Image: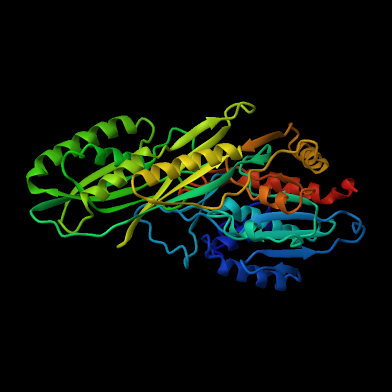
Length: 486
């Protein structure tokens, strides 16, 4: 049940629905609880569940109100999952616990965790459109997809005919005053190195912890002066290459679409090297904090003695360090047509260690398919050269702009009416599902809008309250004027 923290905010209907959504766990690939809630909500409000598929996508439908029967069908689309990030020390089980909502001035956030306004606010817009008794509308379809954040699984699985509308409003954008008309495609690269552990004699162990970084969205924030925790921690390990170090633990990052905020590595080395290892690490720490805090004021580095234990071989350690050093993180190229737009990038996203292997994941984005393919092939070559097994995940297409779309012109016209200022058309270096929807139906017309959501995919995520109401007014005006497209 909702704590009713947001109950006095306007528009009341949107905030009531959104607050209820924040009480329901919905990490990527774990959307069962939110899907169950939506079904109960639909039944309670006499809304038809028109379609459902094996992966979990849902389509809700409401027929036209009196006098609007000839309006074309509008599809409002949002995704069910959220990126689950938390600050160190925050106790939460994202699969079972509700978020703790914080209301302060003009922003809504969550205490110590990501908020999930991406895309919970979008969900709330769609649901509200179906139950707003004052809204005059043509046929409405509300498309909810699963697992947008980690693999676009839902959008990939959609079959032609799942939704019937020819006009689709995606509500997964994050900047007021803009309409997104183009987005990047993307694809992941997985590196796997088989390992085994051996007990080391006459050895000492230490651990390195990197924390306090901002992280952020691996597309939108990739060109900002933010540090990648993996690269920071790696720099420390590279200072020790002549100390016969062997890795006993290594872990960093949490999601392919979030810039890593934390890094932990445990190393084992000969006892006689203890003094020199400590000196090199402390020198590295002091230098890194001095330089790094110019961009990341909360950067924290801890170095601790640890109990010596089993570690992987020197050869495997060298392979890991060489791979992480060789992987480029950040913008690879910028658009020549749109100033400041990143065209292609890599996010060195996660490092995981099991009893059997070390796994590294890199997320590549690009608005040019050829560049994305080239970047991923380079990654594959680098990984194989140092002994990793490399798998290129299925890529999703970018969304090319259609500036002549009558639907886009209508969205822009109504947006301008609400804000009384010209609305900008933008392209983003982030993945939206729109390219996959267009692959289903090339005649589909698509636009994407949303309120101001800042620091998505991080515990610093928040949404600006006033912007939520403005976008709701745009959506209502669009719905009530869909007849203009006949």
